[in-house]
Image (cartoon, rainbow, N blue to C red; front, side, top):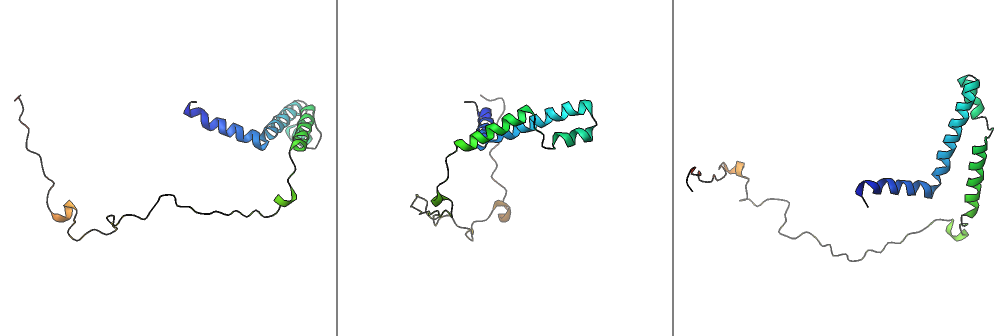
Length: 131
């Protein structure tokens, strides 16, 4: 699977799993209702009528589909409705402390080149034209 396709596919799956497709369809239905109302009346009146609670055919279909989806979901048992206590036991995973060779402070004789005042070593010049 191409790398660029993974994120959109995960987002699309997440939206379907959370039921967001009904919200998207509801926005489309409201847009259609507003556009139809705006053709015959002023914008403010069209907005009031769109969101007044009157349902078009698409809104009714969305409401029915949402209700059917909620009825198909499994009920949550009473025991699971309270607080959920998670217990995490740490096991040895192979990570140990940093070795003693790695220290946060430098040894007194370990100075950076600019602190020593020495220039870094320069390689000898190359001879051009000789093979």
